[in-house]
Length: 58
Image 1 (cartoon, rainbow, N blue to C red):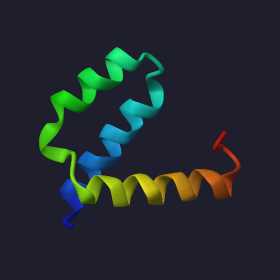
Image 2 (image 1 turned 120 degrees about the vertical axis):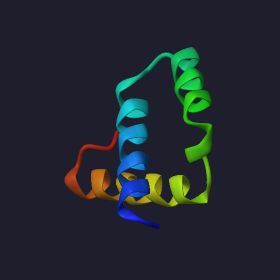
Image 3 (image 1 turned 30 degrees about the vertical axis):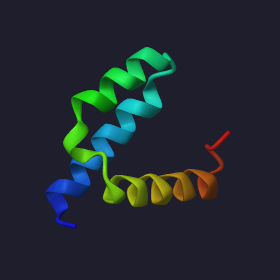
């Protein structure tokens, strides 16, 4: 996974974390369909673990 793709995943994850409306989450995911893959899943797991360690995960 290259750095550019990783940054795109993180940008997408930040947008998803900032949104609580299910319709808007669906819209965001549809807008970034090209990023919805196993790389996104792996990055989400890493971000979730970092949030857990920092105590920011509810």
